Length: 152
Image (cartoon, rainbow, N blue to C red; front, top):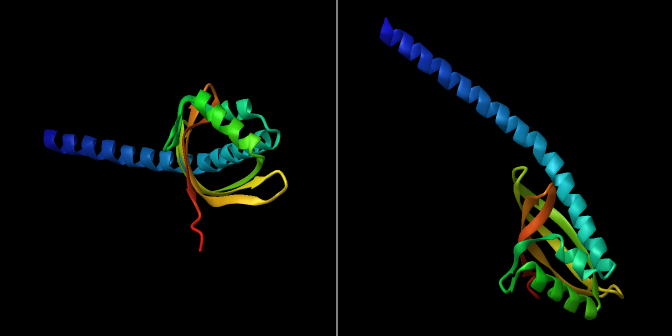
């Protein structure tokens, strides 16, 4: 009889865990659409800061210890890199998320983008990969990398 009760308890526990997993799965699916909207909003902010030639605001979208892989480390250096781009008249961009994974604290975004001069001339197209991290309630970029489209 004790074995039967033990087996019954284990079965009930496992069943409860499975239901909880499904509930968490559903919450994650529901939350991802909200997270997609939040990241979309941040991308538009990024584009606006570049258009407004504001390298400091762009830099503030990154974590203090952020990296633009492979060679720009730290927010101060990221601000300098954006300042250089802006001085070269690269003040336009357009980004589109193609995939987003993660949770409400850490997200990985895969997307496509275009960089262009103030006069509209395209200077680069490609794919990007961003790692977003929640920092004091705001999504900030922790890692950033760009893969230029191959010229044919």
